[in-house]
Amino acid sequence: MREFSQRLLHDSLLASAARLPDRTALVIEGAPHTYSQLLEDARRLAASLQRRGVQRGDRVAIYMDNTWPCVVSIFAVLLAGGVFLLVNPQTKAAKLQFVLDDSDAKVLLTDGHLSGIFLSVLPQLTKLSAVICSGNLATESASSVESFDAVLQETIAAQPIAVIPLDLAALIYTSGSTGNPKGVMQTHQSMVFAVGSLIEYLRLTNEHRILCVLPLAFDYGLYQLLMAIQLGATLVLERSFTYPAQIFQRMQEQQVTVFPAVPTIFAMMLSTHSRAALYFPSVTRVTNTAAALPDDHVSRLRQIFPNALIYKMYGLTECKRVSYLEPELVDGKPGSVGKAIPGTEIFLLSHEGQPVSAGEAGILYVRGPHVMRGYWKRPDLSAQMLKQGKYPGEQVLCTHDYFRMDKEGFLYFVGRSDDIIKTRGEKVSPVEVENVLHGIDGIREAAVVGVADEVLGQAVRAYVVLEPSSTLNEKQIRALCMTRLENFMVPKDIIIRSELPKTATGKISKKILLDQEPI
Amino acid sequence: MSIEQQIRDYILANLFFSGDSAALASDDSFLDKGILDSTGILELIFFLEQQFQIKIQDQELIPENLDSLNKVTRFVQKKKAEG
Image (tube, chains in turn yellow, brown):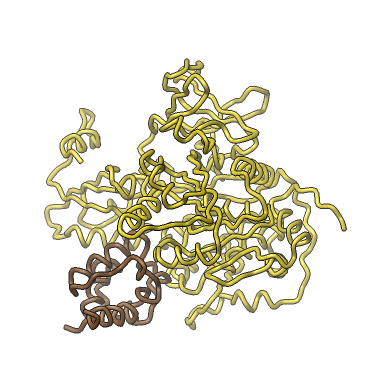
């Protein structure tokens, strides 16, 4: 058999399907799918995408839930030579349109139950050459939309593609402090590298059964899939953590060994555990990222996962993952997110660009093959994050987050230098929410802040001032936000004020706002 | 008011944010419609427990009990009958 030399992200699927064709690659909502099925379907869809005009480097948007068609689509886009971008299925019309426009997506792959949203933006999208939809689409007005199942039945072969490791594999959209999301450009090379580094420090083998309840549109969720396929392991994929009892049952049934989550999920589990004990002895790895896991939670999680190594990690989409703490050191290094992931390095610099001494706060820089190529079509924003590195032409990532490092080189998070809110492990740009509030008739001023919340980490709170003639109430404002923002971005509290405090220059002072109203 | 109507009104006003009753069919999946997520479900449970004087166990948080208006209504009826 021909040996595969892995250069491209989807080479993992080719290799695993050749080595382990009958092995279960995925268990989706309880149903198993083998590696050979995944490769077969992905190849068919790849050929159909090419037939619809997808060429090397073209962007294809995947606006789907965590489903089989979604996983097939990811690999099909890569096999067709394209660049995939996953859009969270909670995304509403205006943002979906922005992302499709911004990326110049050529094809949209989506789900029937999202038709209420995507059909409303199709007339405005001139660059899309095809829309392929899984599941039921009970609308006569959608003659331009093709059925996913029918497209898979086409009997054509995919054309060979000339993609090299420096080509883009994915655009990963992430919230930014400027309001609109930005597409993080990741090459095949950087993603293959990151997958390998993660597998190495998590000490995973092809015997592992990895659970994913996080959206694949979130890079933390996506990499669970990429790691599983790389290893030839099994991914147990669920749509969400909405029905916890179902997830717990699946974990038992499937004897899940890897449990990746965010602090909000761990907080909910601990609350359940305090009422009726949870116990998952099959789990040998528990990972946390997106926000800090309190040390107290770690010790209580050991009751639920008695056999697990617990990993505290830190990262940002711009380089996937920055650091992890060796699980054996969790008790010895409380509060730390560890050291750089294998094959990369990190360092702290002062504002003036000088090294800082141990224990002093500095801005975290990241160096390694996992660093992004920049933001899609945003050289201005890319220049703020990517700085001249050690060698000519090399770029390092400036995270703009403050950390300190102890004498042994362990990292401790100090604070963010922007005002991004972290809620349920997701990034929320206050500007993005404020823009939506400002777009509501009757709202004169709005200020959005993050306030501490036991379960959410931070909760989104909006202060608004109404026009004198307005009769809007909090509930109506929330309802309007729901139609324009993903659920996690909708303010948990809306507080109507007669005025908002201002700085000397007339800008709304969020600091005074929060000081006036202790949380 | 029937149990279904009370639940429908609550969901339309607090989770789906629509005054249009026709926008939510009795069999629509809350997950598909994007109505429920992991924090929304806690709000729904809190409402059901208060409104109908029932106690919902953690292990009952499964789609068969909660993922559509019809399912929630049947579930509440069953819980009330169990008393």
